[in-house]
Image 1: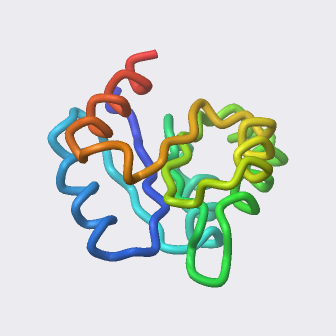
Image 2 (image 1 turned 135 degrees about the vertical axis):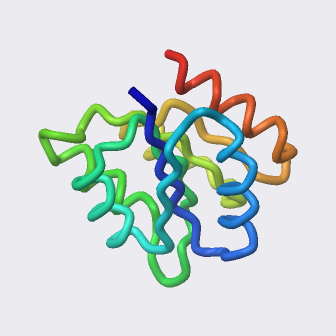
Length: 123
């Protein structure tokens, strides 16, 4: 059965680039631009992994993480946070919500991110 990856990213250029890169993996790619849209897709599709940006316009990804963790059917979904927001208290909260990692976008190339995601999907 093909694994599912949900990308929650509000920047169209970045979202499209990662959808393109990650579609090279043997994985079904789902995408959302807002936490609300991401939660609806996660609840319906039950992805194996969520790649989540934290700063999503006027909203933030922490709210999505909290909602996912409260929903029995998807509460154990792996969430990989991928953001340019580097604030220690936020990172601590995110890791406390069970993120599998917190990656700063500026520290990784698209190819590196693709490899990291591929490894997490194998687990």
